[in-house]
Length: 261
Image 1: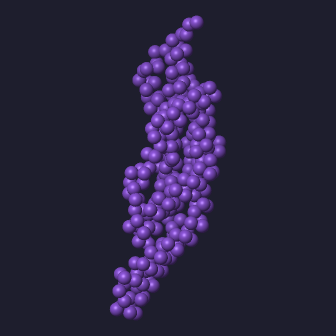
Image 2: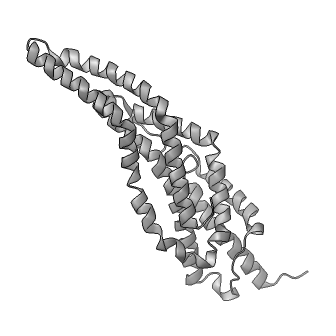
């Protein structure tokens, strides 16, 4: 039994190109791409998905002398960038709620309660972490991770490896879509900001009516209590905001990968 060199090189090319796109996504998307998940788990997940995906997708034929060439290296880098960009969109979706939590925390005085985010290593308010954990649970309950895997597999048919340059023509859509982070976060906390503004205005009226009242002694605990009540009321509308944002992110991913969603 003899195996030709061309068959071996084609096998290497198929798995390397598919692995590059899938590994890029698994290393940058939420949950899988965080520091909490060991690198080995991410690597084994990407390898398993590659083995499952290669038989059902079409990979362009690669000549024997092109497997370890500069053109092949560039193609692998392009597939990796595509995967990283797709996974990064999910990160942007979750950063929306980090920004919303920071705005509320700073307005209510809850910003003093901060901790280190284990997924990014950055110190963020505890309220932002609460919103991120809620978003993570909802994302898993909606099978968001499975939808991401489905989209990346379908992308090999809608956006073949040989036509990957088309993806970079629409990369500006992701840049403009990133603005929605601040828009959605502001819309989510707008009611809280207005309510806290009313509280601060009431303190201003109290100060003018009774200057002997120590505003720092009374105002801080009252603001925190009002902030906790406002957060409790905001959590009721958290799920609709999250679903709208995740659907917007999924729509962007489908547009970039030319996948029908």
